[in-house]
Length: 433
Image (cartoon, rainbow, N blue to C red; front, side):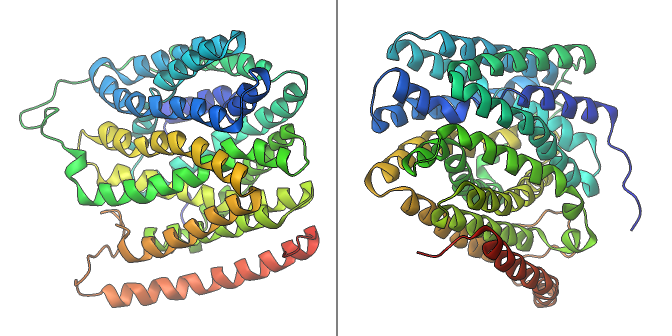
């Protein structure tokens, strides 16, 4: 297999900047814990406050895509990072619940501004054949910073949760400085005839709406593993700060598993099959969370689900980039990114209610069942990138042959997954209830 061409300098510099930003980016999972402990409110109230943050990220993501087209991508990234820093410091300095709620809303309004321009820079700077690799490397870059952030969270979280927000603000400002110095200033070109803002309507694209629906469900699951994990650990008698160690394990897996994502066998899988396999891995890891009662067993489960998460992040953003017509990449990515805002709004409420009423086992079991449903949906209705070899719609000639090819490629992966999970459960002592 020929060696891939190196990524463009702009993409490499952007990935480096995101590593710096991610070094302090583990404060958000502890927002509900901070509200609950420092302001003496119950899980329900803490979840509702966190949900206001998630709700604010929806217009933030859409504004990020539009601002990137109007004032430039670098400027939009800088605006979002500086806004996040101000909001994080406000949360750290909060002395009342009202103050903290206001700061959480401000954080939500700034939190997603820099995502659409960052993703658009990556998606449009590399050829189609490298997009999965580029977006997987973005996940690895965030994970590389996350390894240090997880250890920082475990350390500072035992001292005072407020220091996590201070560390996050510092990393945002450092990332903004790096972006300002390293990335070229971009001047958005005026739209040509027939390509104005009204010419592209992402919400009328059936393929994008399908990806948006399944992506929102996936984001809801992902946000549970972030926002509810510290509270779930506390209910199981483990320190909430141990969530930082689990985050570090998932980050290390994301970095170390990059060769697996770029392997010939993985790249030959069509996008729907790859996404189905990824959700099966998520289901296996979350089932481990439901059954595990010790930290080593939780760590093993975190490694399994993070493999699925890595596959999804690389494939789905490459798919959305490919679905977008010329000049509309930022808006397509922004619309798809609202799935994270919806999930961030619902996840704290759903997670805290399930924890309060049914416990952590029910929470993780429910998320695992949803993963199994998503795996089936990707095989049935998941769109393929236009650039993917053998792309066909139902009823086209050759669909049966493509399905047989997917099955042949999937069979060895299924056998390896079953063997690996069996060994993992024996080694970690995870016992079924």
